Amino acid sequence: MRRPLMAANWKMYKTPAQAAGFFEKFLPLVEHSAHADIVVCPAFLGVAAAVSAVSGSRVEVGGQNVHWLAEGAFTGEVSAPMMAAAGCRWVLIGHSERRQHFGETDDAVRRKTLAALEAGLRPIVCVGETLGDREGGRTEAILEKMFSGGLAPLTADPFARVTIAYEPVWAIGTGRTATPEIAAQAHRFLRNMARVAHGEASSSALRILYGGSVNPKNIRDLMAQPEIDGALVGGASLDPISFASIVNF
Ligand code: PGA
Image 1 (cartoon, rainbow, N blue to C red):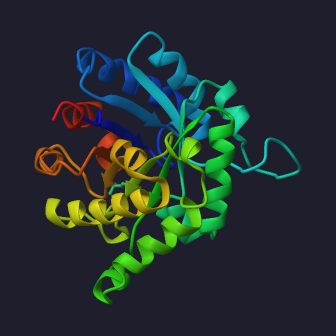
Image 2: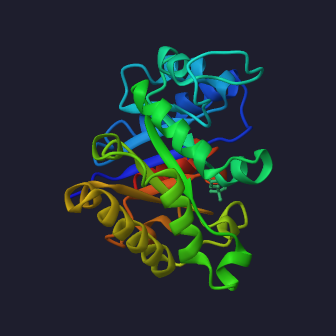
């Protein structure tokens, strides 16, 4: 049985004070939620406030992006060892907004994933097709390209510490969720690629999250699919009551 993982992606929202205010309300609501791993990914400047707020709780903190080198002359970037030292345990990699607006490639995803693993962070690697890809019948080809470029080159041991988030771009922030069936089909496709690349044991242990307009109303149907191991939640994770009810689906 794969343990559910519920992750919040706050994107470019919340100051440190707002992050602290979120946890004051959120932590009591998930105090008994031992059924799932819970991760919150604030903007970098909110990490310190989040790490201090979650101390002693079951909630862990992650970054939203990482550079692939440990240090260097890269203005504006943050490295994996820095994030680990700041108390992050997880990091999102290759989110579609990074790919779309910041030109992130599959090879960058691969390098970032390796850097994260080397620093002891657990990467959540995001993949997903655009509406044009889906309507053009290219969903599987896109997922295959992202998987082959970003994750297939890893060897078995690092791959075992990776989580994948399937996030169809057309469902992100649009209020248009993939049906549980559409999501489950993509998850099966991804798991099968993981099986071919890394073997049966790693692929059946691999957690694949769904992301894209997840909310307290649709989470139960999504989680009813045995292929869906959790959620990566944007908009609906900004409110503590809403994210807690997703965690406690
Ligand atoms: P959304 O975002 O839940 O607001 O659609 C999900 C994501 O981008 O990870």
